[in-house]
Length: 97
Length: 240
Image 1 (cartoon, rainbow over the protein chains, first blue to last red):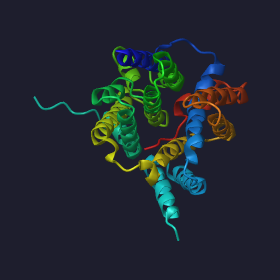
Image 2: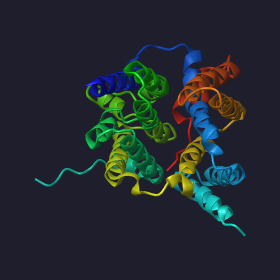
Image 3: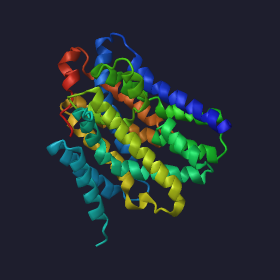
Image 4: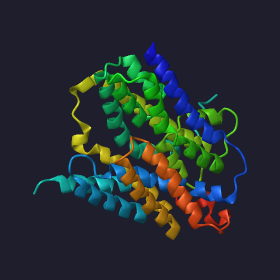
């Protein structure tokens, strides 16, 4: 019973957050329009750096993989290709020589 | 009467998120294994994926359930982890106005990744958004089911380094958005701030704080420039 009440609370705060942003409708001042323009850039960067180095002491090769992905994304703007290039770099560098 | 054609934009949305399946599947499996370990039933494990549909919040919640946390603690952690969706909705709502049933539907399935592929694209439609959202929802729930059934018989995906796919995916979405000096300043500043905050704050909070701080930085650095000059609607080169 407590479990389902907790789930109801989780759904309320999660769906509430997802709906609120889409539903808020008013004319925003210039400053906040520019603010919203930068949201994806700031959030994507924030989703990259904390989980990049991982927790297995492989920070350097994971960083090298990220550089490879960034270069591929810059040259091609192709998501699948950029991820593939990064993961292949990672797995190749992981092979002990 | 022939079968109704699936809208091409819906298919494009599914396709745009397909590279992420390789990251979503192991994450979903890991969540389900953790949930079963924490004592949740198959139904409870699957229900969280269907009803809450938020990976990091679900993983945190089952950890808290296992540790005997109170409902209030679990719900407030979930809120902290997920309140960043307000920013996604605000950003998305301006680029893609949604009417009637479309808005509550789009809201239900909204995730980081779905927002990511839509925000990175010039041509934005509800069908594309829904395709991206349902592609991720379906994959997440199938992975949950697989993990919940298989239990802990599965090898640790972290050993293969599959978790690296998530930062790489967001990096690949970020790079084409960086087109001028202010974009670069916001990206670098946000990256550093999030890294520093992640060592001090739990789960989703660094993303929220950085999302606000980085966007404030960008808006402040472009003060005096009219907003149409930063091309709100063609801010991104298309990521396919």
